[in-house]
Amino acid sequence: MRQKGYLGVRYMFVRRAVTAMLICAAMMTLLTSCSEPVEKKELLAPVVSVGEIGVCERGDIAKLMVKDAHVEGDFEVLSFDADGYIFEIFSDVGDEVGKGDAIAALTSADFEEIMTLEQEIEEIKKENEKRRKYLEAQVKLKEKNGEDAEEERLTCEKEEALMDLKLSQKEARYKKLKEEDIGYNYITAPGDGHVVAVSSSDQGAYITAGTPVAAVATDETGMFISGAYIPEKEAVGYDSFYAIINGKEYPLTYVPVAKDVLASLSAASLSPKSRFTFVTPPGDEVSIGDYAALIVVAAKKENVLTVPVNSVYTDKDGRFVYVILEGDKKERREVVTGLSDGARIEVIEGVREGESVYVEN
Image 1: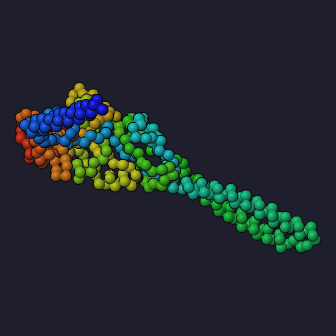
Image 2: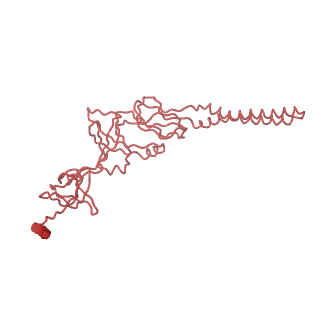
Image 3: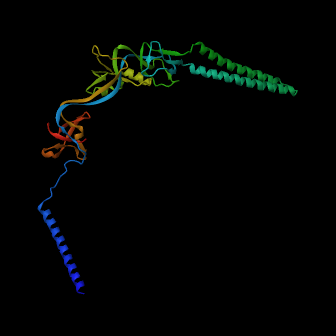
């Protein structure tokens, strides 16, 4: 019994000692935390991947648009001198042609009627033959039965006469049309060159004389740049144009398309093209058919303050940048922006020249 009591007292003593040690440890931790205040950090930038530092600096900036174009020669618009139906357009845009090569063929306005007459004449002949056989069978049947077949004979002769008259009228019209030479009418290339435009009219489409069907460029002495159509009203609002041909830059002059030309092209289902003249210095090798990158300078500003475009952020309050301060701190600044070329953007208000801004990768 003495041994049991001794163990119980010893257990209580150990438990109290452990409890006291835990309380002391907790108090020490509390006192330590109170004596060392926690530094409060303020995130001045969004949590993003590691970025770079950009500089607010002055320079020229331009908004550019790049369009596909080609070097073309002075071209001639081709059309038929008669009304008719398009039989086939043999060439496509970009095809090289030689002088006299057929570009398209036309059948006369009577072509469809002739084709119809040919079918009708064949059908009338077949129907006439069937009707004659039927009437002859009726006459023979009457005679076989010993009946008077005179009435059937008269009916047969009358119907045959009507059928022959109808057939002769069709054949006479057909012969007249054929005698008027309704063969194919061709338009051909006026010289060596290549096709720069063709009508989108389908085979069999009816067109009138003078309707543009194709255009062929032949004269290398009057080369120009041809590209996607830019209306004159739109073109006058741009700053300038230039082309890059074989790695070299050439200033361009916009040439408006006359209204009557636009109207005729539209009537022929032809898409208009914009034309630009340029000057090739001696020694430059530029040929018809060469690819040209047409650069449209939509707007341009000189000596303006710019920052990298990726340094400008946007939220519900507007646009802003993070300016890098001493100690690598970042300060949010609202900015007013202007023209951008895709790499840099004009800043009208909000930053000063020489300041550094955070650029997100």
